[in-house]
Length: 263
Image (cartoon, rainbow, N blue to C red; front, top):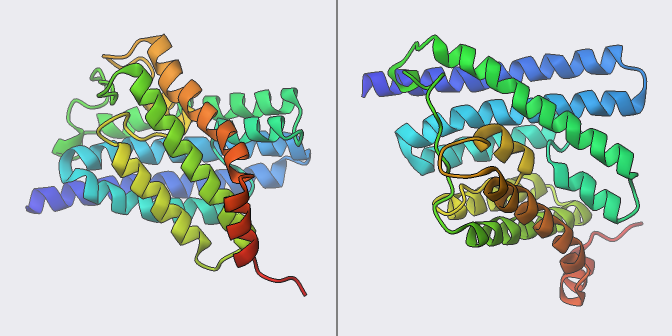
């Protein structure tokens, strides 16, 4: 048990270190970058790197201490990210939503998604460095081992899982942002974490194409096309679908009924 607790402590330190480095990277990006869009590109890249870096370590936690411990860490981290990322989302389909709604140009959406992919893919070298130290047994042989897919169901079913769960997440997030509840962040984090755990043994529960590509692209058991269909087409379709679902009269009626009255 002692070794197990030490290993969990090291994983926690790695996650905190990643968050601390991202925190200061954000400060430097804001200070040295005067152009708003260029700053947004840097902040998206940093946020995605932070997300993926932490989630690489969450894989270690899930493998060694179970999904429940993984869920606790993810829940806390989700709340933290909602506080520090500001306008950054670290998620490609949020930009696609704004493109569909006419709030963002195709060029801007493409460049922001590109920045997220760069951040998500680049962070693995940093994680490899930490894992290669092999301070604890849970990191042994993880730095250069082949990874395996989290997709445990047929491709179409996996895409449907990612689609539906992403749609639910986005509808809830939109509603909570309009309701402006003090507990909105906590509720959003709880629902998101619950959906991730529910989908864990099906698709892995990523609901974020950049995250899925950073953690699982090229892993054994899934081809390039299968990866794209499940984690990009599935999640993005769910995101776009959420725009229509959120406009449903029943949902709009609920939101308007509970929306705080403006004075």
